[in-house]
Length: 190
Image (tube, rainbow, N blue to C red; front, side, top):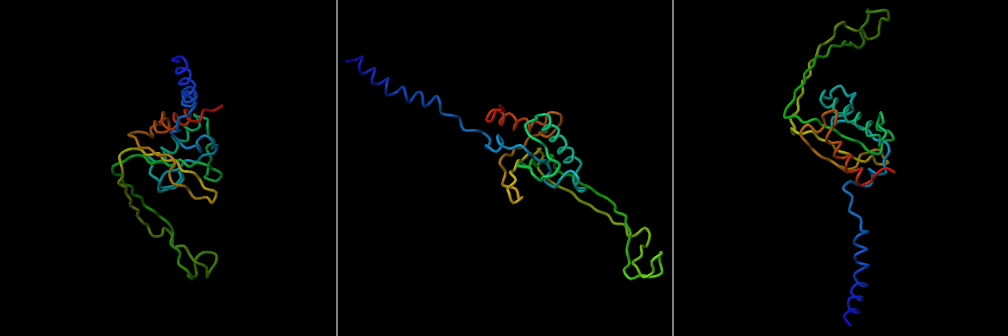
């Protein structure tokens, strides 16, 4: 009788133990990281060609792009056209400032008698100089966020984001390494 009870209990529990062993752990990053192929990198304030972008953010874009190339899992696109994921960076800073001077030409509509084409607007030489000032205050930690590019071209909410002190510093770019470890663990390349 005792042997029969042990066998019945074993037959009941054996499938439950097998099911528990085959149950997969929930991924730590969304499946889009396993399926995406094309990515784009920019800063919160724009792409690396934006003249108003702070040099620290421009360097962070370049460092993340280089680290993505070294990783080899994704193809880094020169523009966001065709990108499935957009990596957005912001170098940490408590406060920063920028200043500049613009020099251009002033055009006076309807002026005559100047240049080879009388009656056309004329340029008055050195023009009116201008000055530009700007500044930012923000968190001291570096920031990396990844968003999906929707078919309409707009960006989704963040699918992954982290902050870290010196997290965007080359050559290792620790924030990207954190993401890389999670992606490789959850969606290993075949």
